[in-house]
Length: 141
Image (tube, rainbow, N blue to C red):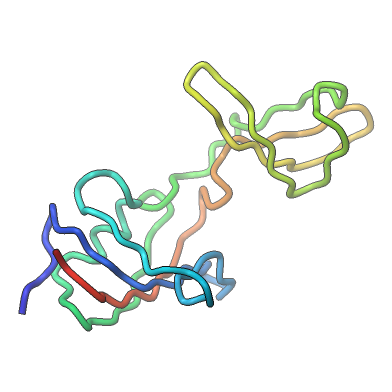
């Protein structure tokens, strides 16, 4: 039976959760399609990709991914306090905003609201978190 290797295009069902069991993403939700990606092209986080290696069609597995192999470590200096008048209207903690930079658009999360300022966080929402995925290989091309 064929085992997944670098360069293969794979189709998988997955459920991603935090170590406390909180599900943050799943292809198993009604209306969602399984994930299809070509390995070795940077389409997936490194730990997800390496977890798929050597699996075959029909295989199911739970993998644990350290934050450095997922969305990276949390970087405190990626937080910035900005004046409230620089924002496009009312915001709430946890809200995500898009900002344009020289390197293209980035997503900012509202981390804190103070008297006249807001703390925005440019880290990925899953940065600094270890992740757990349940994987099921559906197809290998």
